[in-house]
Image (cartoon, rainbow, N blue to C red; front, side, top):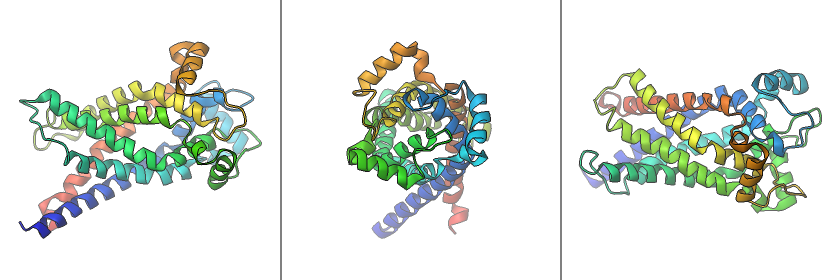
Length: 302
């Protein structure tokens, strides 16, 4: 194969990764939007201006439509879609590209290095992509917590411009430190452990859909549980972006105050509904693999 053909093949593989990730991401974002908003409200309402706190998942689902209408369950979803597509497109494409830049290790002879390499690539992928779109994620959090009869923001761009005007560009990156840590932990496990499992547990040529989903489910559940406290801290820090008075001086102060207010349970507000996220994430991983394998098959390249 000539150098030109090799470059064309690599470009084609990146295109397949981008399309596969983008399609899967949009479907996941649309279906999971109401659940995501409910989770965000329960997770960060302590740091918001909600006068009557929500008591649980059912209470949020019943109150929100009464207060803001049925479509309020999708409030902030536009920011999520704008963020979601490039994040997952970057995650899947950069993950493949970064893997090509690190040494290759044999899982049978260098298992620890093999696992560490996959974890590093997965974490670096998530950290790179989230930095580029973080302001949209902050806006999504603020829009989701904008509840009650009187809204603080009229829309996505109003929310972003209001926060920017009040605190400058840095205010759009409130909570980025725990976000970076959380994404490195979550994406490192999400991609790294799944890649490891795919080349060990799922090493046969055509593993069943159920077996692939089961492995992906175990990976995403573990990743979500370990990184959730960091996600809670960053949501709380997001809520003070653009405000005149800050509840927290930083990441450590937020950790300390949350723990003092309710112990370890304070970090898992909305945790029950967040467990549904790994189901979607596991399905996303498997669908991506199946779609990419199908699109890259010789029969489809003729």
